[in-house]
Length: 336
Image 1 (spheres, rainbow, N blue to C red):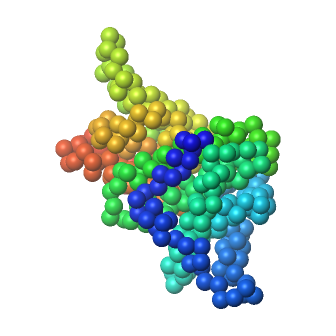
Image 2 (image 1 turned 135 degrees about the horizontal axis):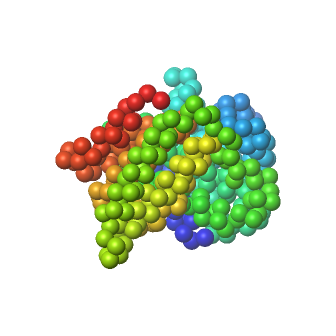
Image 3 (image 1 turned 120 degrees about the vertical axis):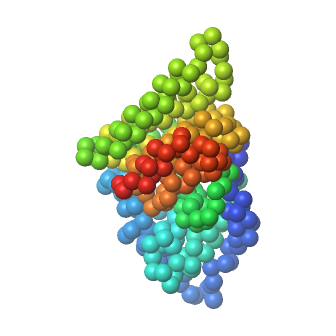
C-alpha cells in the first residue's frame, strides 16, 4: 500500500500548506459542556442535502446516509472527511455570510482526517477497508472542489491537475486491493455507480464528443508508422482508446461522473509524465477529457473543471495551438 499512501499525500502545494497549518482546535470550543453546534449542523446537512448531490439513486443514497456515518463512528478519520465535504458543499451553496466559516471548517476537518488516516494507508484490512474506501472517494471530491478553478479562478496550474489525478489513482489502488471485502460489505452499491440507464435525450452532445475523439484516435493510428514502435505514440493512443471506452459506457448510464472519473486511473502513468512535459498531443487529449467532464459530469464539486482543463492545456502550449483547440473551446462554451 506504499503507492496508495504516496498518492494520497500528493496534494496541490497550496493545499499542502493549509494542511500543515490546520489544527484540530481551530474550530472553537468554549468548554466541555458546549455542544459542537457547527459539527452537528454539518452532519445534518450531510443527511438532508449533501448526499443527494453525490449520488442519484436510492440504494447508494442509503449507503451514504446510513452505512457511511455508522462506519464513521468507529473511524474518526472518516467522520472528519464526511464533515469536511459537507462543509465544503455549504461553502459553495450556503448563505453568503457564512461561507467563509464553512470553508474554514472544511479545511480543518480535512486536515484532521488526513493526519489520522495516513498511518492506516499501508495497512488496509477487512476491518478498515470500507472506511478507507469512503475516505478516498471523499478526498478526491474534496480536492476537485477545494483546489479547482472556483477556488483559484486565475490559476492555470497543471501540477494541481496531476496531483488530483494521482489521488484518483490512489482510490483505484485501494479498491483493487480491497474489492472482495468491499463487495461483501455494506458499501458494495458504491462499486456499482453508473449502472442506472441514462435518458436518451441527454446523449446528443456525448455522441458528438465520442465521434470527435474517435476521429482523433483514427488520426493517431494512421499517423503511426507500422514499422516503428514509438512508445510515446502508443501511450497517447492508448489514453484516447481508454477515453473512448469510458465514453461508450457513460453515454448509456445516469451517473456519468463515476464513469468519467475513472480515466485518470486507467491511463498509463507515462501519459501523466507526458502531460508534465507539455507534450502537445497529450495536452490536446486532456482538453477533450475536459469537454467530457463539462458535458457529462454535472456535479458541484466538478464545477468549472471542464473549461479549466481546456484552458490549462491551451495555456501550456500557447496561442499557436488555438486552431487545434477551437472545437474543444466551442464545446465548452456551448450551453448544456
